[in-house]
Image (cartoon, rainbow, N blue to C red; front, side, top):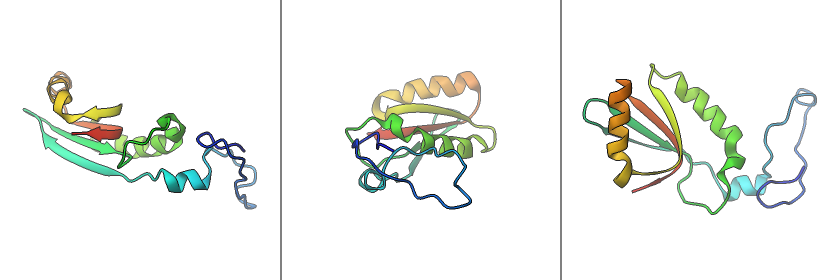
Length: 122
């Protein structure tokens, strides 16, 4: 396989149990170590509802984050099972500019919001 980030050829280890399963990851181990997924969260109160921002990366890497869509899918499925909150996805959230928009959205839905993002700017 070819790594989508560094374009290096690599081989995924397969066992007898995973030999015929579909392989979802297309990123080599070296790039996984270099661009670590470090989940962090920040919770804050809007006017009437709560907002939870979950970010996947600690630093703003200069890569295409779409290559981590398989990992995003796993995190999204876990977050969507939480007590009826609406889960949104943004590439980058700027907390200085987006708070008013989030407040309007929460009031429109009349529910708490969970935001999954790659990066949070403050």
